Image 1 (cartoon, one colour):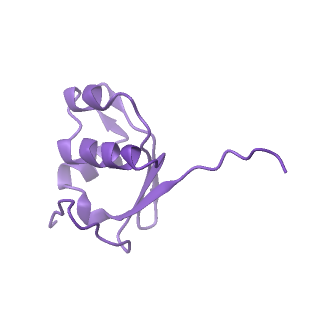
Image 2 (spheres, rainbow, N blue to C red):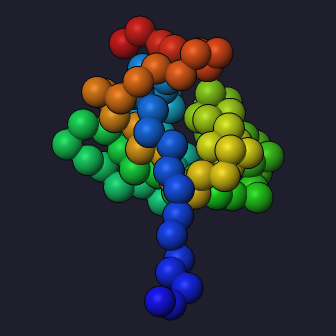
Image 3 (cartoon, rainbow, N blue to C red):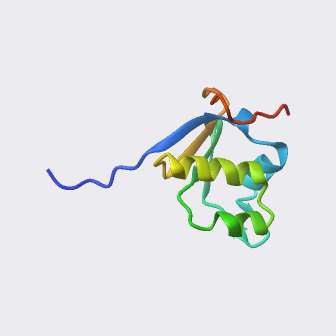
Length: 97
């Protein structure tokens, strides 16, 4: 068997996205910050592994989204699957829309 490039993703509710964060994902970024986002039927698949979290915040990416990207990265995830049917993660903020 060959060495397969298997990656992990965080499956999390879209309730963890503020309205501003969701708009940022809809637009694929904000200001100078370009995010790798694939819209899905129920949310977004977002590339989360980044060393540029400070740059993202300085570019106007909402802090709640930056925090989620950092959370995923700290937990060994390369992607976040934001899904309206996924579970809410205790200890992380949620937003009503």
